[in-house]
Image 1 (cartoon, rainbow, N blue to C red):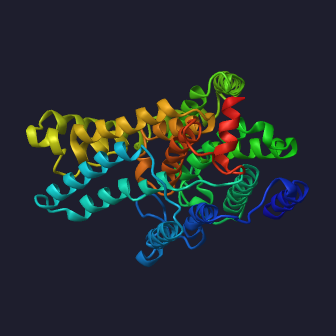
Image 2 (image 1 turned 45 degrees about the vertical axis):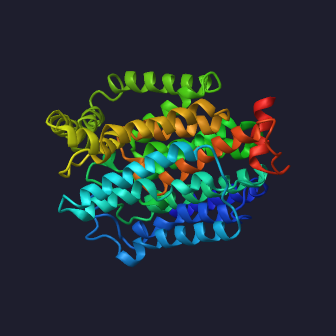
Image 3 (image 1 turned 180 degrees about the vertical axis):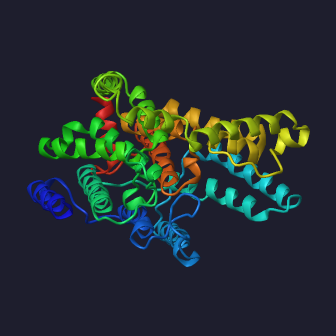
Length: 415
């Protein structure tokens, strides 16, 4: 079966070879490709986080730190080549960064679990500089490159499913099988697919029909196989933010949902699928989020002035990013993040950027995506693109290069 799938995939790739490429043409494209392929070791070598996989242990530290070293190298080259730019976003980001620094220093002086404090400090701040990277990408070339990356993810997923090797998220019941493809994690896979699907919707007129005909169902099936409920909800949030452009897609999703609902209580009523679905809704993962919310609620209600200002002092597991940030930085930290989000969404004009940012923010209600690589990379790049696009549309701003993606987006907005 694996060979048959790959023969079909090769045939499709050869037929659509003019529509995609995997040859990066810029430093940013090289880095984006790295963010997609970095975690291939999780499934390939059976190295995954022990808390989320069936593997015996996580990857060696020297493997996991590669992504940080590559990011430092990327930033260093960008600085050397003057690929960073000024943006008014800095006036909103700087208070957030400064406050998180202050909260981290205060807690390092008081709490004993310094490792947890330092981990949560750098995960929220590490990739913010990407919001200030100069974007000078050819729109057509970038789209072809993005499509090529999508094919890599789909192909690796087929390998994971049909190879016969254990998936890190596999359980005895078939319904609970979850796949992470080249990311090695269903949630990161889900967000990548969500952004890809939103891109197909927004740039539909720029993508050839043959590629859309195959890629759209492939990515949709990939999102389902990821089993990432947070990504699916994020996808719906992104589609709603794109109304009325997305009304046909929302209608199709609604029809499929109704058909599935009716089928469960007619065609499949005597099978175990209904029980599996019910158990999936109330499984350990879902129940843990309810418990986490109750723990945070109890902790916040007992806070004094120091807690309100700097957040909690003890470690409380929290998958909701906003509640997690509340525990780390108090109410002021959450307000500063909200300020960044609000002013960015006010300025956003490009539909893909609006849908992508909203989808990540929505999904972060259930998984702390802004702390997770590579989703935080994609988020801050999109935030930076919003501010670059807003600047490029200003009459006082210098015109962007004629072949840049920002110019293309600005032209789409004016049309």
